[in-house]
Length: 444
Image 1 (cartoon, rainbow, N blue to C red):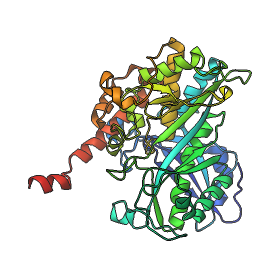
Image 2 (cartoon, rainbow, N blue to C red):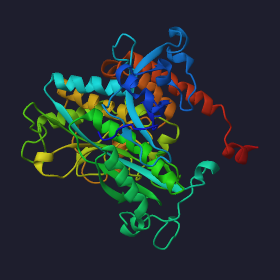
Image 3 (tube, rainbow, N blue to C red):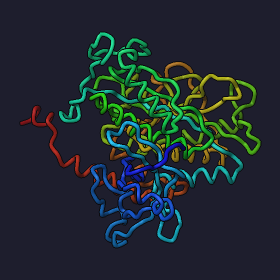
Image 4 (cartoon, one colour):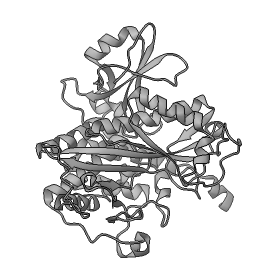
């Protein structure tokens, strides 16, 4: 990774909590050597904060432990520049360990690392790419707490109020913004590939190139979300990865592409034909079998469940098919050497480390148990949705399914299940205790 702290430049060291929020410290350049050697202490309870950054007493990480510290160790050898910052600044990603040096497994990056190690034990290396959708917003949106479509700063200067999918003109009107996004990606080592104008007004998708390191792929997604928001502020825009900022417009998805390499670097999903190997089908079956149990990870917030509507390009039941964007698990058309699986369930508001951990663990479960999938769906999956059990479509129901999941206990661990369940139950209690505007409008 490029980057070097010089002079009086500060740097941010942060971990990612279970909600995907960045938690850490801003440190002067003089502290770099000590941080790289010894890490930074943070309370272990930080991993299990609720969405607003408050303690979750029921998760077992606060009073039961004396709110003890963990050690946050850098995952990069050099700091990474933050080119959108008004003052010179770098950043360092970290993950948390126990004081004795063992992995602290509620840490999302540690959880993903543990799943990758299970693949390595079988002789496989996941190759992963992510696709993240986001909305650009008018700069006043955050202050107003309501989304507002942005004005294009170039071209005809119009407000982006209409859907214009795959529009080059729409990107032309924001060319300087996207040039800065791409430049910042290059500086931070994020392998950004294509940029697409999506179905919503001011909605875009940027795809990442495949890397043979699932942890690095999650790092890229994590840094990318911060990067887009930072560059947007420089243009007096807002940017949101909220799952469904507009009730009647397209939601923000987070699609994951992956394949597996053996010890010789051969793609084990490739059989030279269109269907893929039995190993690919075992992986698909594992994804389908464990999809309901993983829904709380793919859709972690109340708003997340607004994406899942028939005909809204977000799957409502566990399904798969070849070159079919109406299913949950798609096998894209590609040269056979690039045969891969696309997982299309998660929202862009989800934690990248947990999404990849859940996807890869489910595939691994299917491989280890040699599961067989149902028949692939051809045509409109929504047209046959009544023939399949729906995925958990409410936040509290997804929490219950997750909390009782033997799969989650086995692959991601009891402590993670306990902590995340407690976080979500506290968030639900807080949100459901508030009376909404629509209730007053309807019933007062």
